[in-house]
Image (cartoon, rainbow, N blue to C red; front, side):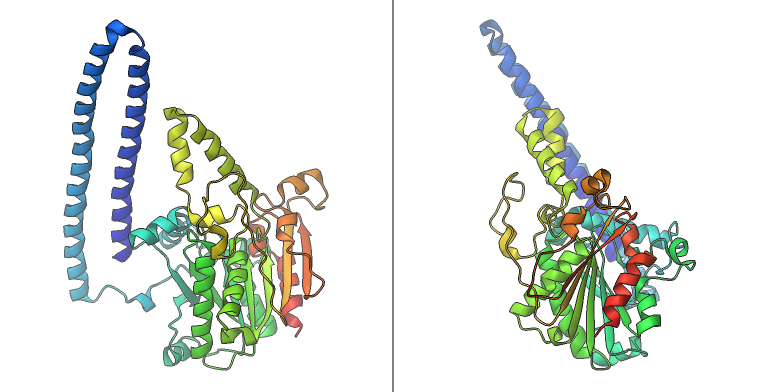
Length: 430
């Protein structure tokens, strides 16, 4: 019911915003036309009179649209209230901890649950900051999951949810516009079994308990990083057995979130850092994502021209989420975006985020060409992130490994056997 209310709220907000865009474009066209007519003195007076009439009539139309939208919104709320009361009486509404998930299998696409989950991931990635600001029920927040269930971070409940918990834990952080399901993409194609993922393989080969993070990828990376640091602390406090080894594995934006979590955990002296052994980044845009840089420039160019054909697309582009805008330079901390214009074309506020002593960092990059030096591979990387951006920082004082795998797209990196071999080799070392 919370999701249905969130969807309803989002639809009505979309109607209001679209109406505002149309009204703005209508007013801009009219003002420019009247401005040209007023250049002819005999026509200036009549033109202004016509414009006043135009403003009055259009205001009535747009106010009516907003009013009807609010009335439908109210009536829909009444209907949902009735459904919720009926559901509570019948006991049909599951509690938050019992919320069913889409099975992590590569043959799930096309099912109603998968489509709903995929849509949630995309909506959160594109406008997740707006959902959080409005308190919309579609906001995914952040949760830890295992075996298609939300993990309750209370000791006794967690022990029941993880009866076979092991002292080695691998935490997987998905990328932009995704959910944890992304880790099993193309499983049947790559592994011959639709249920295989890096998590199941690490459990089979090295005894790791896989835990998956689901989060609102439209929020600032630093906000998600700080929240992940808090959740990992709660996990360590309530885990059924002592955690001897913790591994963070992040794909794309998830790699940035993992690094941000380590940064804030260090500042806040989180205890889970004592168990952290490896941080593995898979195609993470630590040096920035080209597509977001192009979007930023395009929005700035469109904004420069005061005509409806460019002004409306510019406003739509500018509405992309804070999380997406962070990808332009790979921001990890609050200081990099706080107090700065996220749409400034040339502004780059990146700060050096120190790595952690005693932790091995592995950066895996990919290109669609076998060789990273091929002109196409060098230019487009894995179609989303260039190899240079994913290769990580250059350091002589920390244990850093950089690995490149050719012939893979950005989505392939999430569940490809060649990538797993790199992960397995790192996790097998103590």
